[in-house]
Amino acid sequence: MIKIALGIEYDGSNYCGWQTQNHTATIQLALELALSKIANHPIKVVCAGRTDAGVHSVGQIIHFITNSKRNIKSWILGANYYLPKNISVFGGCFVVNTFHARYSVITRSYQYIINNSIFRSALKNNRSYHFYHHRLDINKMNQAAVFLIGKHDFSAFRAKYCQSNNPIKIIKSISIIRKRNLVVLSIESNSFLYRMVRNITGSLIEIGSNKKSIEWIKSVLEKKNRTIAGPTVPASGLYLSYVRYPKIFNITIKNNILFI
Image (cartoon, rainbow, N blue to C red; front, side, top):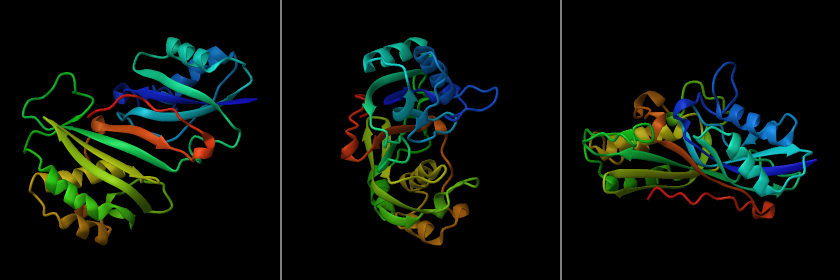
């Protein structure tokens, strides 16, 4: 049996998330159908991080096991032939049996894209969050983000139906940059709670629009109360951007798409 890892890019706008569900379009189902045609036997894929409905990716990693002997280029080109146009494979490699797309992860990185223009964009409609009420102050947002870096209980940014057993996570880095009217939040952590990135972004927007003080987010974090944190921003702006694995696995799959 052969184990293969692939890098996946997708526009999640028309999908009900990653995980296969009955009678609904999902990323996992589309990939399994395409790869099964190439392998000539049923394929089950495992992903690095399950994304919600409407969430996108430029750096999802999957693995699957097959007894079909094909080179990596054939798997990539074949998958892209059978996949819908809003899902594509951008890279791949053979991996050892001990590699696991989900459980071998060291950190995951996400980006959240905000269209901070007074005018809506037809092209960015389902690929960003149009926040036009105020010009965001990214200096204040970055100052506030410092309070979130490190090991904390992130219960204040945890959605109601989160299934994680432990609200304590370690944020390695978080930053906000601007290029013209695009504001991009980048965050890297060992793992995330359900909707944690979208809830953190909503809280930082409260600060960037001068509704809350910089120190407010520290108080929210300490009180561990979701009801006093900021709103959950839409899924349309969220991207799984990169997954980091131990060097021993030699996973060099990385997309060349950069937002900024």
